[in-house]
Amino acid sequence: MTSLHYEVHGPSDAATTVLLSSGLGGSAGFWRPQLGALVEAGHRVIAYDQRGTGRSPATLPASDYAIADMARDVIEILDATDTARCHFAGHALGGLVGLQLALDAPDCVASLVLVNAWSKPNPHSARCFDARLALLGALGARAYVEAQPIFLYPAAWCAEHAQRVADEVDHAFAHFPGESNMRARIAALRAFDIDARLSDITAPTLVTAARDDVLVPWTCSQRLADGLRDVTLDFVPHGGHAHSVTEADAFNRSLLDFLARVGTPATPPVHA
Image 1 (tube, rainbow, N blue to C red):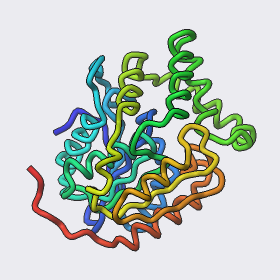
Image 2: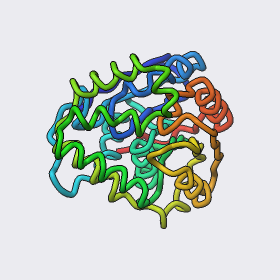
Image 3: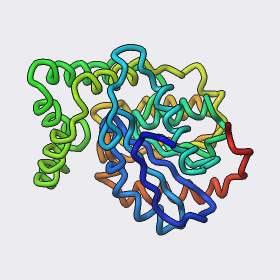
Image 4: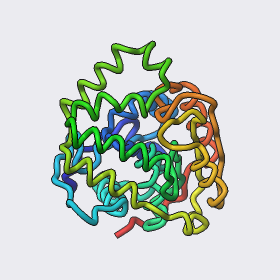
């Protein structure tokens, strides 16, 4: 059993399960552009709202909350869905959860897909988070979510999809998890550093990044590719931090091609 909200899509008897973990927003809805393609390809898909966000309400600890806590939540979801092993896809913070899971419970991870993720802190992203937290503290949640598309999407895409962006901002404000939870989540991702342990991860990994990401430098993905053992690197020229949304068709092709290459995982004993 789990108190976390999760959704299971696709055939229950599929040979592969893909678990989708979102970024800082934490919502399963972030992966809507991928669900149809994954199910059509025959995968069972699990998406979930991370603890303290969306439909998984909780008050997060004010201190010492860590990415490792989020990885344990994934194990809880795998247990609740009778899933011994999954292909794990994570965007940004979700990618950090996948890296931690691959270190802490490697038998659970058949492969990793890391979207604009990182292995250690960098000063540019720290500056961006400082600015976002300053907005949150000084002006509140509305100002924080109004700024969010600037970090997620290219300017031209935002202008072309102005109503969609406005609707997303309204939705984010209506479902804002609270300032304390947001600060705890940002503190956890800012403290994350497994750079020295990258070579311990044996799962085949797709590292994908957009070179025009204004929040996380593409060089962070290059660092992941340099440190991991079994890696496919996919850089795209544009699409922003959320290029899985803005360039969904191209992203989905890369994702499905990777999953087809890594194949059906052998099933280890069910974890305790």
